[in-house]
Length: 347
Image 1 (cartoon, rainbow, N blue to C red):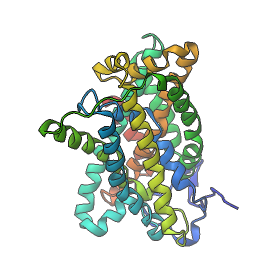
Image 2 (tube, helix red, strand yellow; image 1 turned 60 degrees about the vertical axis):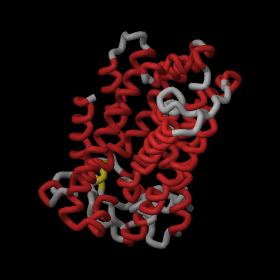
Image 3 (cartoon, rainbow, N blue to C red; image 1 turned 30 degrees about the vertical axis):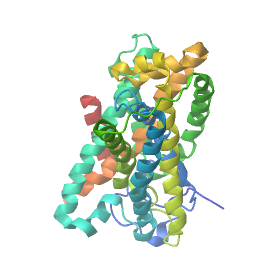
């Protein structure tokens, strides 16, 4: 029977295991479908909608060329994520530790520095979006900084406890989000229109490549975390299944939500709401016909930031340990907590 039991050291429920290799005999995480739900939940979020919404008003693309960019560049961006995820069960090592095979000890530290910056940077972006949405929902009664703090606390409560609790949360977090986005699609679909593709030329090429770069970067950004979330699965876990479950776990939500976000902006009144770059204003306009239920939807969408930021927070704690033995002596959950404080202060 599938199980999420992970026999790694814990203290008061907190995972103590850091970047040390997980020996094969201690691995008991055999729920292989977690390779799909982990990334499905992390990407079925408002940030993905916001990225897609950039295509037409910012990069001046049309409907069908935007769809083509979304599909092609996501497919390219997810390939490294899916490949690196196969190394988790095979090697029993965390992603940034695996980088030492390619870059050496010092090179691995340099990669870890970049990854810490990425973890904190994405966390800042996500909580700012969520905090602004919380503030808008309250009519300004709850300031953005308070919304940021609320979302950061909820994220940290899961990420500091570690691998087992991360998977328990991400295993189900996608379900309410899928229902919400389906409702939004039904409400918005009558307003969608096909925006024509601009005349092919230098401006069109620049828009295609710029938007494609953003799409690619969003998807492939998970590469530096990939093996962190199946390192406790048995060595004999089929690599092909891990690859495709991970690939689909990132590809499906990114393509669907980026396309949905782009489609929202084909309706001029909604596109005007996005003119200031605030995805919360765009989403509020979409659900406004639903009245009070729309407000509830926005509140739940703000909480989607938690599922998106959990991998950032958890992997941050592991990445810092790659800096050297003095950093490794500090428990992973301590670094996770310190990272949370840092990104809250920055946000």
